[in-house]
Every structure is written in structure tokens, then in C-alpha cells.
Image 1 (cartoon, one colour):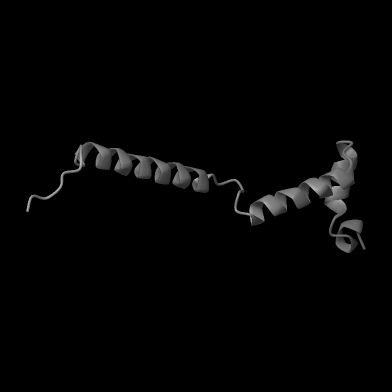
Image 2 (spheres, rainbow, N blue to C red):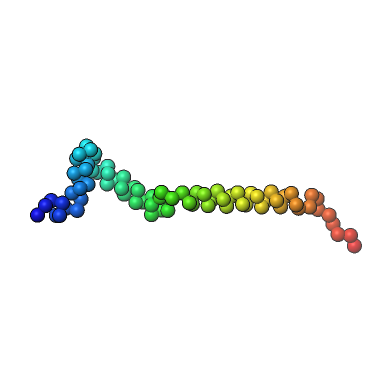
Length: 78
């Protein structure tokens, strides 16, 4: 039986040998990448844009409130 049929990581091992890469470093990098993806910070930066959009909206509403609100408090007359 061919070695690639017995060991599922045969291609990874041969690629690491071909490019003179340390297999332990590759495994550590893959583990780190999986951790980052599971935390939601993977290739998509949608969370960053949504956070930026939320901050812009809140600041815009605050500025609008400050511009349209009463400039000084007035007491009601009896």
C-alpha cells in the first residue's frame, strides 16, 4: 500500500521536507490559526467594520443631540 494511503499527513510531511520547513513550527502555526479563527478574528474583518460603524453612529447621534438640544436650562414660570 502506498505511504499516502496509510498516513494522512504524508503530503504535509513531504511538503515540509521539500521546502525545508520544521514540522513542529507548522503544527504550532496551524494551532494558532485555528485558535484565531475560533475566536472570530479570522480572515473576515467584518467585526472591525461593524465596530467602526457603531462608533460612528453613536458619535453622530451625540453630535446631533448637542447641536439640537437646548443651549441652557430654563425653569418653567409659575
